[in-house]
Image (cartoon, rainbow, N blue to C red; front, side, top):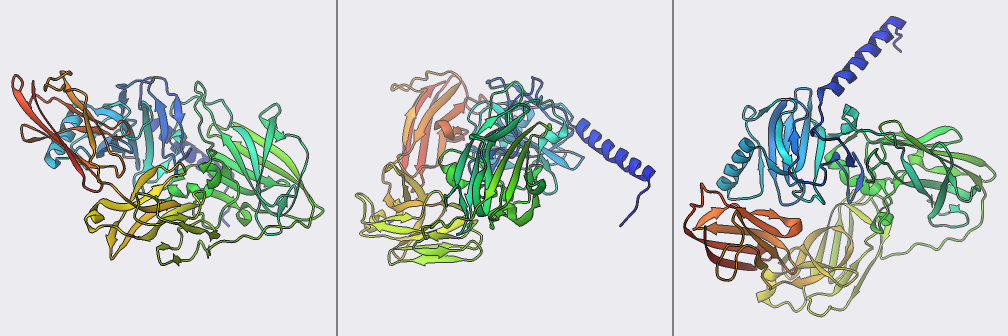
Length: 570
């Protein structure tokens, strides 16, 4: 063991403090309006941890966006979904910053992107400019905030990444102007009997406990009486964090579980590799998530591969023994150091409680390949596709009306899938002329049908799924619908600066579209969430004062195509 003198320790402290200060001073806010957050780092989102922070833009589009630090633009993405229009800037300190859901780029970047889109004949592009093309200074204007991609409202999604690994880093560790004197709140605690002999208050299934709050952000059970339990037990909490000046629900930063004063489990959200983000489904109670509540486990499933846990004794599972009293403390923090604390007691009491044996069609294990097949159906799940062992359940019913296979009920939607799982379904009485128009689809609880995918080979359709549910072979022979918003029946423009359409498909979904003006490819921007196609007139490409022809074709995922034709004066 190395032994340091007092002066050496002081020097190390000064060097570390200087590095932290330098990093915090390196960045500036990416907006010049007050910084209020509507989302934070590693907040729980559907099937992933949130990779950055969401900065409010006063509920409006067009707020100027500035580079948080000097560097160069190394990536530009335009997509109808996901991040929409996004810029990526690499900085000399080993980090990169990301600016997403933009409305538009500044003029020179916009011109570069538009030329690339016309060159590639595609609205969606993923570009890697030369390093010297867009050198950027700190707080230099780069774009304007928007609502593009899968955004649910105008805001700036902002990230800081490790440039080498592209891991997402917590931006709030770098001293941006976010005011936070508001502690997390704890809404409920959930206790899980994990083994066959476990119970919580005489129950062999998980139990949710309501909480009351005292002064100084302290919480306790309501009523405040000890829990009676025995055997291996796990805990979870439903909790959120909040920021000053905002009512938006955000996520916690740090959680610790203590038993009789000893820390047994803890996690912290400082870094998240994007390859790991789907493991969020193992960190939460996925069943509760499907039903609308996202909670943090304070124990780890065996197939959970996240690296966020800095204390992990027995995976956070507490073995409650008969006749012993346990003091449990759960401490939740935000990155500003505000805390919420829950305290309660457990009395260990061994009770002879019968547990209904689990049954199913086949026992699936998380650490092996799993295969199940019938004459009409097959499922293959690779090792690591699940987070824990479970009894797989399968049932089948006769062919639903209008479909070309039996209705295959494939386990429960409340069981998460990590890696894609392959399913195969045998087609029944499917005419050959419908082969190319057919696919595996999902049947929702309300009977709604949706596209999954797959192609036929020797009578079987095969595809991959990331969620369990009901599946059957469906057919889509109806082409997409094109509705003009800017052109009247008599080929008259109703908008002077642009042409707009809505496009929609009844089942398989939009695969591609193409607009031609005067026979030349035209850049129609696609807003998928609003099913909106927009062409903004470019005088360099559409000469004014003339009559022009327009042809728009839209194709769905099984190659049904609709075409709209018109002429207009512009």
